[in-house]
Length: 94
Ligand SMILES: [Ca+2]
Image (cartoon, rainbow, N blue to C red):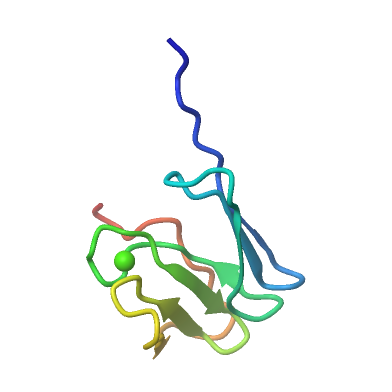
């Protein structure tokens, strides 16, 4: 039996384009622009609905920009950290 293999999404920091292969429809990759060139991708489930949200951290301003999957039309903009900080992969303790 063949194992399903998940292909990781990626983020192009020079253009701020995301490239995602959805597990529900692998033949239709999603190409999505979110963030600005130079931003750091920080995808995660910020709204707690169990789905990963598009999110970037701007190290030049220490702002986080999140598109919550539960309400994509209301992006979350949040200042957290200081200029030059580096976001870590996962919250400590999880
Ligand atoms: Ca979510």
